[in-house]
Image (cartoon, rainbow, N blue to C red):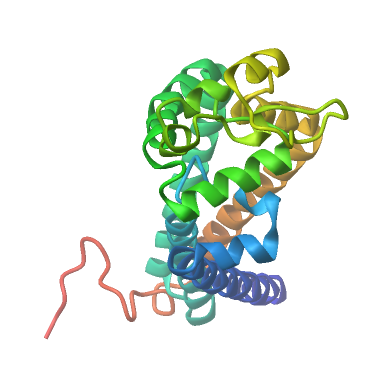
Length: 259
């Protein structure tokens, strides 16, 4: 009984922290969606390294909503000994875990396919918006400066873009000076051909592979926490008595409400 009470308390505290993290992510996601430029100014180049591949604001809002729901269900289910809330918590976490494993397998096995898909998605956007959309242009400039890269694949991604049509040159990040810094002179096609600055996607993959041990450790830690949370939720679910583990506050599947 003491073990059950201890696990129940830890489950409540743990999910309360998840709940708070969900609230924080929701707040940051809304902030990025409403005022992305100020977010970039505060957090610098590292905050923009993925912003050209996904809409970070919407991604954070979605992640925050999931954590918010998980934290609420886990905390409520453990504190009130509600079996339905615990089961919903377990199922949502199981779906997330399976999705993460599937995404990891796809990323490892189909990296080339993912690159091709992102190229079809990102490059046309660069040609359409770089130089005309202020926030989009700022995100790319910050990323190219921080990662020392040019475009998604290379400098040709900017051909036909509003920036290129206006200046008839490529972004300065696509040309390097003698000291391997950003060129101060106009970056023409000839200079870009001579410099061969790596694309940002390849550079990002290189950075991830360079830090593969850290990335793997973080992924393994997250997976371990998810497995532990699922095990604990099932332990609480299976050890609750029927009278104390009913569906108070929720309608259980397969149970008709009575009047």
